[in-house]
Image 1 (cartoon, helix red, strand yellow):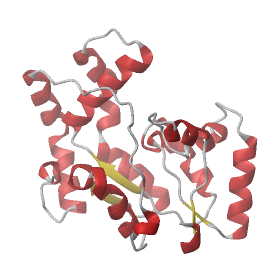
Image 2 (image 1 turned 90 degrees about the horizontal axis):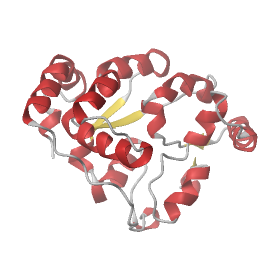
Image 3 (image 1 turned 135 degrees about the horizontal axis):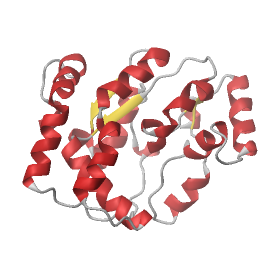
Image 4 (image 1 turned 90 degrees about the vertical axis):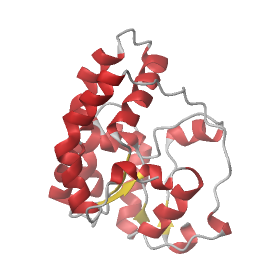
Length: 215
């Protein structure tokens, strides 16, 4: 990537990924520093130095789509920023999120109770509009259409980088809990909850194609 003028700074969580464990992405340590939740001055200093040199930086973090959205403008620091998001259908995300939260936090509530906690974070259009207010138009992609081996080539295509064997990613056995199947009534509640804004996402970003069904 560096040969193509793109720098992917290593974050603390990358070490976990290399050992075959799931990681929240290389941008998490930077986001936690900016938000004051964790001191990572060396990572911030390296980020600032890279911006000063005019480097093009690539950051990935699930937290940028969650509570750390508010620090993204500070990380961009007035530079041109392109934000790409890969969306999962909310019904699928819910089953995976509930499985993960039970494994990580020893969560004992029901999946219906967890939905009540998680439902604001699955209003995708609100997040997209919030990010676009400072970053300009986002690139919105359907995760299920490119997941697995197609994700990296698709991402590279979005940022204008040719994919070749030099940029291949080794297979890693990431330890993720199996998603929980949703009860039928909850599945329908989720579909109804987000139907209007999913239709608007379809209109704005997918030329009217049903992105929920893209595989």
